[in-house]
Every structure is written in C-alpha cells, then in structure tokens.
Image 1: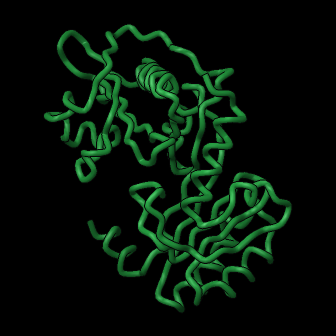
Image 2: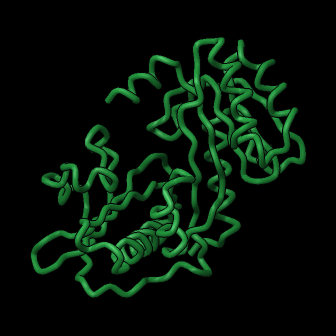
Image 3: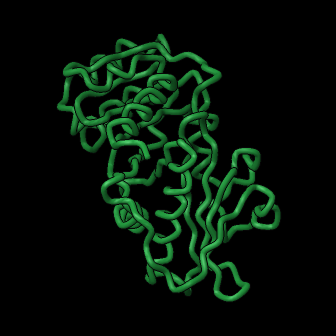
Length: 257
C-alpha cells in the first residue's frame, strides 16, 4: 500500500495539472499566481480554464486565474494571512472585486485524503458487497445522488453497497475523476443512519481503491458537519482547500434550481 507521503505527492501533482503549476508550488513559503490553461489530464469534472481558483495545502495559496484577473487576485492573496483568505470577512474583499468583473465566489470545499495509519475496515451489521459499473444501471435515482453521478455515468467505476436482506440501504461510489485519483461519494437511507454504515462503506471502498494503486479522495463543504465527521471516522484527514469563482449567471442558475 502507498505511504501517506506518496498519497499527498500524487494529490499535489494532480492539483498542479489542474492549476497549471508545479507540485512544489504548494509547499513553498510564498504565495504563487499562475495563468489557467486547459489540460487533458485535469480532473474530468473541471471546467477549464478557471476564472479564478485558489488552492491551499496549508503552507501557502496557489491561484490559477485568467489574465484580466491576475493583478486583482495577486493583490488579494498578498494582503491577508493564508488561513483567512478562504473565510469571511476577508473573502468579501475578493468577491466584491470579482462582481465588478462579472464573477462571484461559487464553490468552497475541503478535500480529504486517506491516512493509511488510520484507514481500516470498520464493522457493520449489514452485508457489504463490492459493486462495479454494470451494477449501477438501476441506481441513478435521488437516493444515491451523492454516491453516483448520472451526468457522468462513464466515470462511476467502483462501489460498495450495504444490504439489509436484499434491500440496498447504503452506497459508497467512486468516480474516476483523473488517472491517479478517484473521488468517493456516500449515501445512506434515512432510517439506517447513525449506525456506522457510512464509515464502514467509505473505509472499505477507500481500501479497495488503494489496492488498485489509485488514490481515493473525499470532498465536503466546511458546513457539512455530517460529511466531515464521516470522512474523519473513515480514516480520512484534511489535505487541501479550494475556492472557485464562476460567472454570475452560473451562480444565479445554481441558486434557482
């Protein structure tokens, strides 16, 4: 199995592809700004080039931006401490400047990587079954919308289901978002929550992915306490954060779904 250091390095290398920078840039003492570009090897759900995407692995911030925002974003990331660039009230500064250009802060998320010293199979009183793409055909329904993505079915490659008899009551699925990293999503039916099902599914799927020499990763909003708790309980630890700006029209469309 890979070491934690190898896992982190692979994640940084993928972030470097996504942002058009070097993996070493995330470990530098100073912030860095680069121009965003398309890449065939980027995470497949990303829309590139970025308008503005800020990423931190804890040491600094790397900003990948379009040319006309470079000066503004460079001023912002140089003005506040790294730990405050992704939170209010400082975030309002960049959002106000973005609005004047026709953009807004849209996505803010925390990403988790497995800690191989903590990751292990967890007990579950329900039967767990390994599922593959062919088993997902009838599962693209609202109950499993976090574990599977109907819009990108071709990326859903592996899953673990929890069964109460013949009834599927929990599902962890992963999408092949890039060649070296697969993202895990999890759903558990309401009546079966708070029984350790989510953590058992997530940890087992993470181990299955690692056994294929792929890095599993997990994403959650800071405010999604249930999801963050599941990540920690499953053996994942915080690794990096991202803040992404989009066109105002895109944000308004999401708010009026």
